[in-house]
Image (cartoon, rainbow, N blue to C red; front, side, top):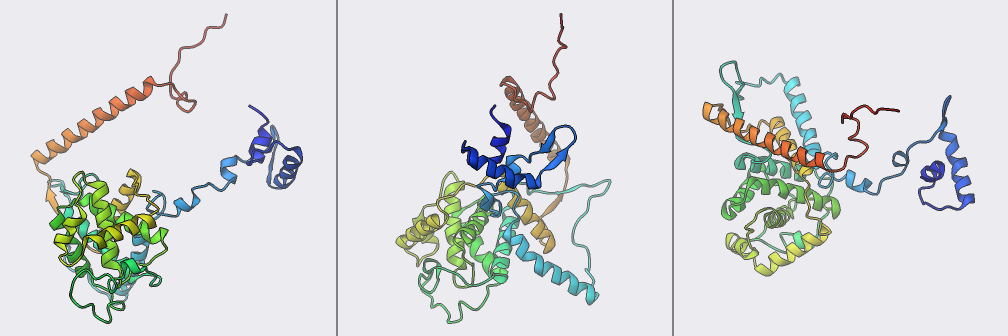
Length: 339
């Protein structure tokens, strides 16, 4: 097992005695004395800075980090609620349906099968808050719409100063998703890649670059997520005036800025899905609710039973493997007979 003190005190693993003594002198200042076991040494994992500390602050890589779009939207949500409270604005008629003893309302959006229209609305609203509450206007030439226009129409002179409305962003994304027949899951992955780009490349999505950044994120998400990916030439048929060479160059730059990190863990995907639902609740974007019918209840019960059986099979496979020390606590063993 080796010397426990040297293992916990010397993270570099150097066996040299002078270095070990120096570490002990520095460390004994923060030790707690115990009556039974002497000085308590803090575990090395609690004292060392982990290598993935930067990833923990990046919501597109780590599930415990808060999403950027939700934090940017909270300012507007608080101001809206404060204004309504001061001005005594009535919420009006309740448009949200609530379940009762006789009727249960559920929506058709789940984390595995989100509702397409509602998901696109939430994703475009997240992009809207990104643009509206941006810190600055940091950008790159490859994403500048003036230098790389998506259409032959002349770009207005104030294109970089006028923030787009949510409806404009929604129409742009909905057109691409409808023409390319993309799924709702692809929209969530698009938002993950967009925030990863802004974090990795230290950029801001602003009026001058939002269309090309969103287009690049959709292009990459469709290739990674969908089994039958849409080719770049297909997007050129949707956006008539863009060239394949421009699409290829933008995709290459996007991947390089992401450091070719296109992995989206399931925990990160689920976090973005539920944060988008929270964003919808804060902005009165309701998911379509329908009464729970007998047929749908039976279908949900069948799916639940199928998942339960699947997890039971996985647990049986896991039990066949060798047990670790953590699993030995909950396992019954016969009493030993001492002779």
